[in-house]
Length: 328
Image 1 (tube, rainbow, N blue to C red):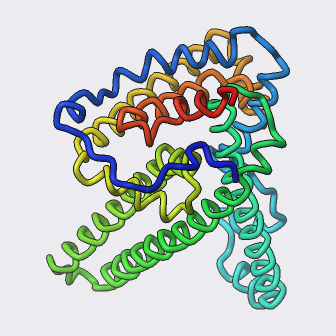
Image 2 (cartoon, rainbow, N blue to C red):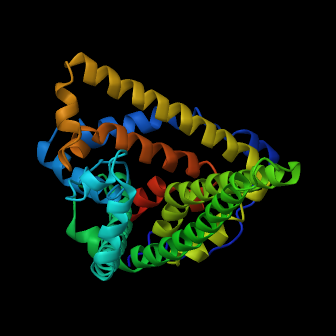
Image 3 (cartoon, rainbow, N blue to C red):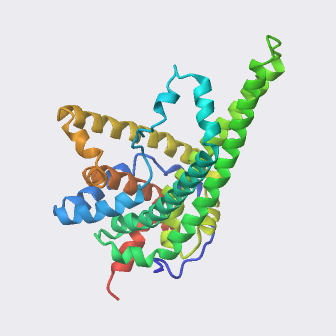
């Protein structure tokens, strides 16, 4: 992997109170917009759009939602009015076959998810490279950032598995308590209701914490890995050197991200309705939709990078890229 700052060590980045108060969620908006103009419109190059769009497509691969509707032959048995005995007979007669097919389908699904996560991790660095360097390249970042991308992939894979187990256990406990509560035949105790509420709150807190964890990983930890030759866990330790003492500014960042997401949603809705829903047809096409949304995606990536750069030169991806591009 090529190091943007080969001489930089993972030292603590100390900031004065004046520097901390100067950190703003509004300040990065203007340079992020200018970065969009510079990369995509000065000059406009359709080939550059499709190349960077491919990197962005990989970076967001497996995210979002495309709803698939399967047309299973057993749908007649699964409709609300189907006889329960008929369903039981189908499962009892073909239990082994159903179990084998379900296990095989689960393994295939896990393999697909792991592969998508691997491609997504590689795409994160490729897209970041295109934004930081203002270059439309695929082969160079694919090769240069193989090691950090694999570290990110393993880190997300293990973290995601832990989160899934925690959420699954909490959900199973809630479901079990609800089942026991429905079979209590009117003997409902306040302690049981309180336990269900507490477990629901714990589940919600785990979901929110995991969402913030992966949000910070994508927005800040990956750029740290891009700047410094380190693993994902080492980059997280570096990020944790600035996070605890600056929880307020990062809380404002999350709130502003919600505002940005609402603004993007409004823009997309206006585009869809303004074109009589014709734009929606192209937006849902894989890769093509990503290319069409490229200005918004570049803005979001550039915004998080400019926000992170306010914490010092060790976190400034654009300054490091400008130094690396200078002739020796």
